[in-house]
Length: 295
Image 1 (cartoon, rainbow, N blue to C red):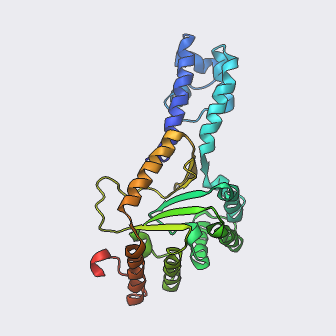
Image 2: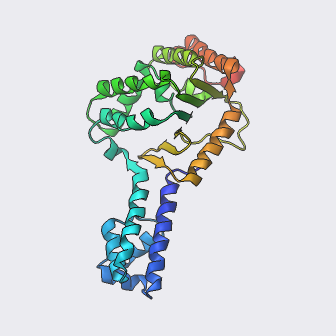
Image 3: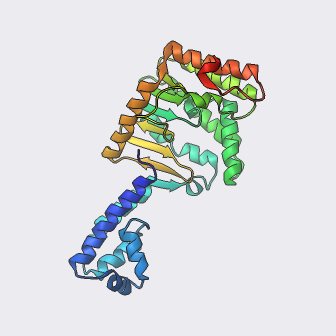
């Protein structure tokens, strides 16, 4: 499944276009670098997808090849590639509240949501306390301004989409998410109780993949959201990835189908959540994570 490798693949494709332009005019990488005033290694890094080509780089490359008219289309392609990959330090430089607000238009426009999570409960199903614990952790880890309370309020307000007519949510969780502590025991019990409530909401289809599911064909992958089967958002360690290329989106949709087939729904999912709540009650300081055999 594509992650940050998608960016490198796209950069490589652009690099090969630039290489073809260079070869078309009989230039070696050394000659093109000299004409552009660069070190020769820069050409190699761009052509092999190891470095991004900036608009200025592409203008210089096209000019060195005597094809200034080719620059505009190549620059558009480069901007599309880099638009897919936004580093958290850029997205969150004005704080967590603004980062939360930046996705609101997409959430308002989308009618069909699909989400998979192996790390955290997805935002629309989070309680206020769980959200605060998650965002406070992000703020501390990334050294951001302290606007956690404002960011929490924004995310809570975003949950109104669950009750808006015409919107549908298909959400798949790994069972391990239920046992991953985010905050004190009472926060987790409240959060899991919220999941029980969400499992009977008409607009929500909630599935949970048991820890003992056979995973040879479909292992756990990174958390992702799909919007109207047209766009995928993925949260990487260093960046926020947006995917719109149809072939890549289809790969996520195919894997979402496989993940859904592994999941328990309805009563069995309810039982998995209830077991996790009981585990916290039995061991308040450290929930039992041994999985299905303990139930």
